[in-house]
Length: 176
Ligand SMILES: Cc1cc2nc3c(=O)[nH]c(=O)nc-3n(C[C@H](O)[C@H](O)[C@H](O)COP(=O)(O)O)c2cc1C
Image (tube, rainbow, N blue to C red; front, side, top):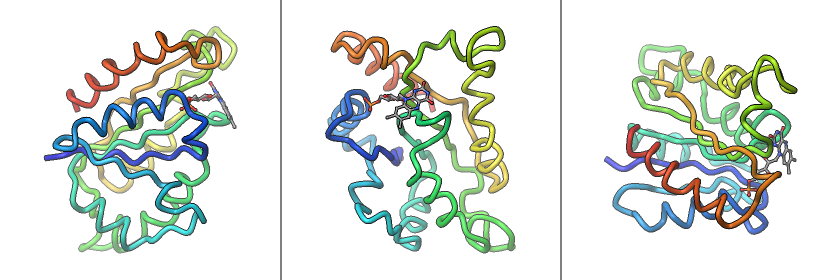
């Protein structure tokens, strides 16, 4: 079964990493379905029923986005707020439509990995900082997986550094 990749990037034309990842995923249409929220909803008005129907079709779903302000771009948060409704995602016997689905985050990150540790600048790891996503997906009984992160884009946005991320991301997706 294919993996659904839900991408949230507010400026995909200006993106280096996420754009490259999408380009790569589109080479394997038999494996990946890329759904770009800002492309589908330029006015940020999410079609909740369409999103729910889409999610229902896949057992593996990856949310790909650039890390912004120690969080996700706002349209992904809006997606969570609006799509994970009572009666569909949780809260009734017929709900829990995401139950058992493998869910993972895939993020591009500006600063270096070592900065995200107890003894360094940001004090917490990305696994810790993304706990609200983990808790939300556990709440809807999904099978939340360890995240994929590619760090250091602000320090090194060379073609070599970006290309290095591509096989790592594909390996991560294959192992999901
Ligand atoms: C609005 C904004 C907020 C950002 N906040 C963070 C942050 O909190 N931590 C971090 O490591 N990088 C941060 N960055 C850097 C982005 O994560 C980085 O530019 C992005 O992952 C690169 O991916 P792209 O080439 O696909 O745009 C921020 C960038 C922008 C534009």
